[in-house]
Image (cartoon, rainbow, N blue to C red; front, side):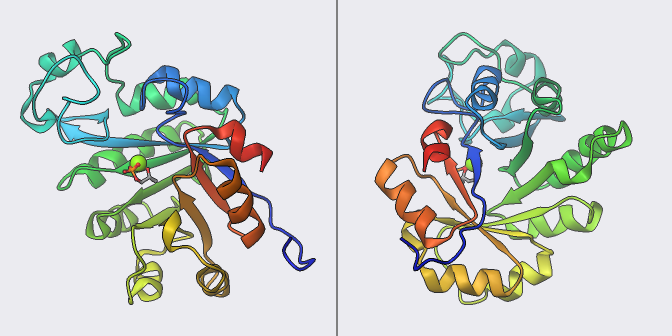
Length: 236
Ligand code: G3P
Ligand code: MG
């Protein structure tokens, strides 16, 4: 119940593709997220050996059959990596080619220094080929990197990621030109949602897999939820 107020439509974002169903940040996870009906797919990108790769951690230890820091590896070594399902690490271009026009694309910048420029270069190519800039959302916890991206490509929507709620969030969001504020679920309440909406920001919440919590956040009036199980969020 939300006191009878009209609920805004809920955007469902498949987290690392659809991490609950397939190895995170793999092409299979992206495809699964789309098949389950996610309106956006979120994945993490890092720059290494001059290329952008989909990977969440700084090391490949948890998600692949190898060990080591991605940033210290050669392109040949990275191409030879296999995730636990035997799949190679996708590049940003491979991910975009797979998604095509089937869903929105939320690219989270995970590595610092050069990542913004490299992502801008790739997105510029796709936008020049006719992809709408609004198809993308670029986000990061690293706000200077996000700011740099925004200077390079002001036409691409920005998602400001925060874990807690910093005192300066509203000013930072304005400076970054953000259209979405994405907050860790435990910090979301009605006041924050109202404040975000009053500033013209959508409020997205990560990462929510529990059905009850999904329904509660929906009733509270959040605009988007990241979920490892997009089908659960769609039901909420
Ligand atoms: O972008 C939302 C969420 O993915 C941020 O946290 O650690 O899953 O990348 P993390
Ligand atoms: Mg992420």
